[in-house]
Image 1 (cartoon, helix red, strand yellow):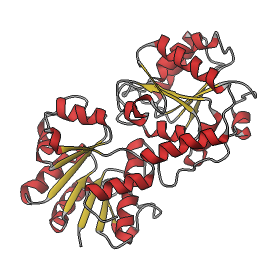
Image 2: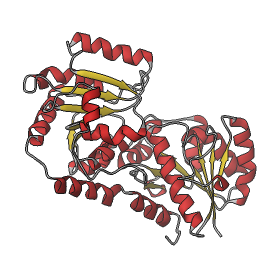
Image 3: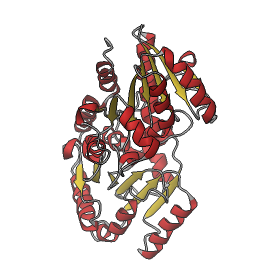
Image 4: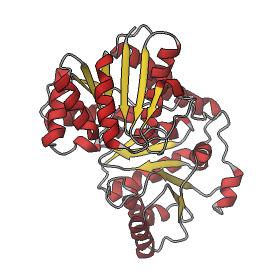
Length: 374
């Protein structure tokens, strides 16, 4: 039986987009194992234990942050696997040593976006060169791998992100009253939403541009509310608060901090428009999550968002540097939302997202790429 090793930094101890991908990827592999189609192991540098909804403890090795033990032990154990899938370029050292010691092993490297948006060098460049295949989560990232990292096109494949198999898909698209109460939102007030980590070192998600666009949006919708949901470091939160003072928007913008997974769907349902005009997004799982909740979506036209919105078919793509374009797109989307959408229309969009990015599609693609009879 084929033996497959998936090496990951984190899947269960953090909540970002890469972790969501890793959980779904682990679940797909675990399903193959449960069906007797492959023998699989998921090994994590930083996780303590798995969520067994996604992967069995029997198929999981955890190193609790002991990086050198991870490298040494997985280097030794890799000899007994047919395919080794490396979930992040930050494990380049292990990848290069596996290929050096066991040159016949097939190594697949998964790339998400930001890590290859500038030319890499040293051990990371060697890891790219030594990989047998490179899978990217979007065409945008694939083109960066070919153009900036000088990798042959035939070595690359697109492996899109997915909706988490346990993500709550709504059937009722009404706004949750408990969140309206929490954020003091009066019935009829328009709500914009961004869900992201607030990190001062990243500076590409575009919520600062949305804040700058709000004064223009307020001319049409004076009581518009903008909810920015996600954990933030102190420096970035203070920067946002400074912008709110500058634009006199303290009454219009809510910083929620961390939103638990069980409330995420309800936050999408609360909003009229999900807007995140990012410029360096590898894909953006939040876009497809928002779409499954019946929300109008606006994203940037220069990054992997283009893939998530299927070249603009599922949402509106804007120049992420144009405040005017962002404001116009939001106003237009809000006006469209004033026309009553039926649950059937929302469900039609939901089904289109699932047909493109649902977990079964994700798992089928993985089976095809690994030549597993799914």
